[in-house]
Amino acid sequence: RGAQETARLLNADPASIFKTIVILRDKHKKPLLVLVSGDSVVDLKLLASAIGEKKVHLPTEKEAEQVTGLQAGGISPLALLNKGFQVILDSSSQNFEQIHVSGGQRGLNIKLSVADLIKLTNARVEFVSKLDAKLYSVYLRAVKKALEIYREENIPLNTKLATEAQKYAVITG
Image 1 (cartoon, one colour):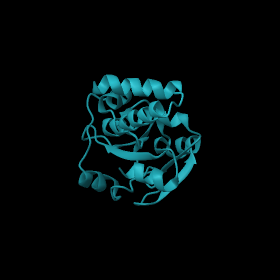
Image 2 (cartoon, rainbow, N blue to C red; image 1 turned 30 degrees about the vertical axis):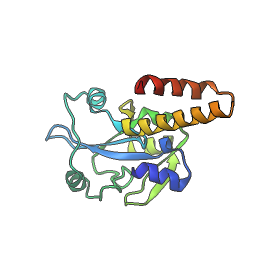
Image 3 (cartoon, rainbow, N blue to C red; image 1 turned 90 degrees about the vertical axis):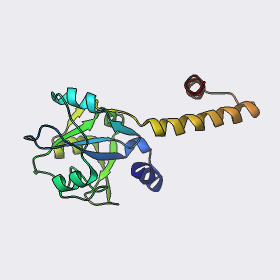
Image 4 (tube, one colour; image 1 turned 180 degrees about the vertical axis):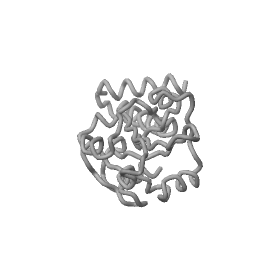
């Protein structure tokens, strides 16, 4: 929800707002900082495979705050430079020249180039996310409503809208 609200406030594409998710792995290894688009969630299986681990898991909010020293909603790889965290940037970032990331405190966001973020944080770019099912469901309902309006007003459909509407029809029956 935070990334969606940030996108609205910044008048930005929600997919360009990247949230930092703390991920725990083997007890003897430092947690990861994984950045994924605001309309996505970390796919733990994809992530584990990408980093060569058998299993990874999400900490509680309190655990994430304890291992980073930052407040949830303000966790940022930029605020944790040189603290030993491995940073993974989801490959969806490659769709943008610039993205928004947390600046290290709740409510502070920084827009920077993907290339600069990778360079600053020594991030690895990996495919580690999937669409947030709840957000996708809302999106599909909106497409269905738009399709109804287009039909009522005899507006020609573009291919993308028609395809999304068909997906919705199949998913919802």
